[in-house]
Length: 237
Ligand code: URA
Image (tube, rainbow, N blue to C red; front, top):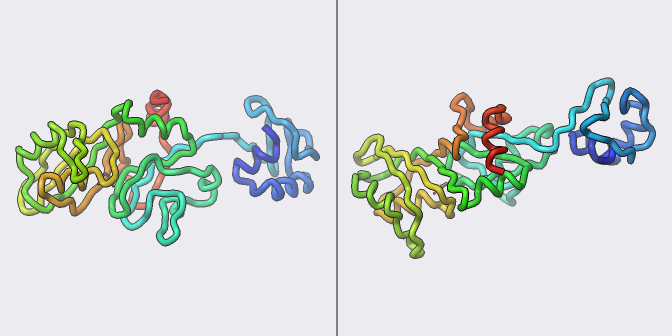
């Protein structure tokens, strides 16, 4: 990889900024001052430093966020704040994107990465990755609803969902439930409850496969995946 590309990818500004750094003698490779910004770097063996600080090359980033309500899970939006706007520039330069979407008003676990292959695998219907949601439902959720979800409910457009596992935490005028779905259709959980005559009034994603929302993350906070979480993700590829 070219030295200027490597440094630009690692957040040292544009290629032009990087050229400037090199011109100012702030960059060394294997402890030699470098003049050629197009120098080819072997990212596994060459030691690149800027201002004596080692630049560790990392092509991919994997983050979990506790998505707050009111932001869009997309990389850009004309009107609203996006989850990417919640990340600092030191993370944004990796160009992460959300793996799948949560509605604007949905909270909870959102994975962000720049690893397209992983995103594809996690979202692939073939992989049957279970996504667990906690929800508050206006209306009494019943054992019949559990049965209906297990069979797959028919949405308003005629689509029959795959079986979903519904568990009732409390049932009443405002019920609390957890549901595990393996698909990711638009507004799926909300539409599944509409199909049984009820309304989701609060929705939060708790997990995706073995990735569980870190409950020390406040709304809007994020962190990098730990080794165990990462190896789970890698096993999906
Ligand atoms: N189902 C929904 O209805 N909304 C979400 O954000 C996620 C799943």
